[in-house]
Amino acid sequence: MKLKKLLGLTLATVVSVSLFVGCSQTSKEDKTIKVGASPTPHAEILEVVKPLLKEKGYELEIVEFDDYVLPNTSLAEGELDANFFQHIPYLEEMNKEKDLKLTYTEKIHIEPMGIYSEKNKSLDNLKDGAKISVPNDATNEARALQLLAKNGIIEIADKELITAKDITSNPKNIEIVEVDAAQVPSTLQDVDFAVINTNFALNVGLNPTKDSIAIESNDSPYANILACREDNKDSEKIKLLSEVLTSDEVETFIEEKYKGSIVPTF
Image 1 (tube, rainbow, N blue to C red):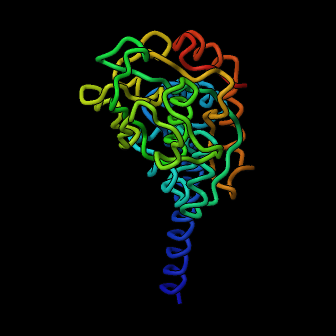
Image 2: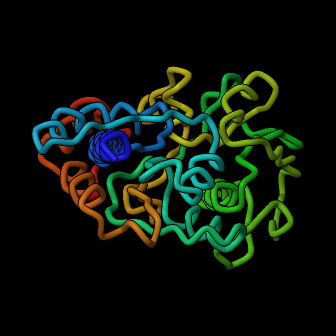
Image 3: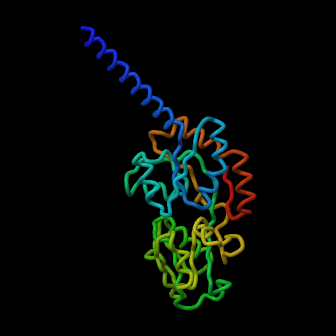
């Protein structure tokens, strides 16, 4: 009887310790916010909020991605708490395409898309049959073609999502070269002009306000957002992250660091 009682007490102690350790680990994990982001400028902006979150008892873990698909699928699968790299039209398109059930809380900033060239200083030098590279994902290609249309290079169909097939007038016989958004800067040597997202332009040392030949206006609808899942939108983590990302400290950092190439929207 004594041996059975002793074994019972020992088992109870082990269970208690295990539960304590498990609770401690869970508590620690709950105090970590894991966010996927593009290296520039999103991860740089997130570095600013690290100490702000730490003051509130949370650690921020930044996971950098070089593409536009994995941050969303990783978020949908629960590997991330949030991501910060995309604009609203892209998120909406990804939700439709992959049924991800993602949403967003705040609009953080606008990254104006620009037209760049290593061979030409002006669009006036656009020659017949010139090659122009653009991102190949649905929303960013539409955005790039809209910028080309606004600068009188082509005319396009009057709808939101367009591809090269929706060019209705192409007097210069422009060849549209569709490549992955992250790879557009690497095409500069091979094309006459390239339409590049600001984060990828910054990655290769291009300043949108100084180096672009043409650029989107600040009233662009493509504001970059803090994305999350529908099921964690109202969690304490996401609320705190939304709060610090729209703080005075972040607004000042964006204005001083990027000097107009990236514009706060809060």
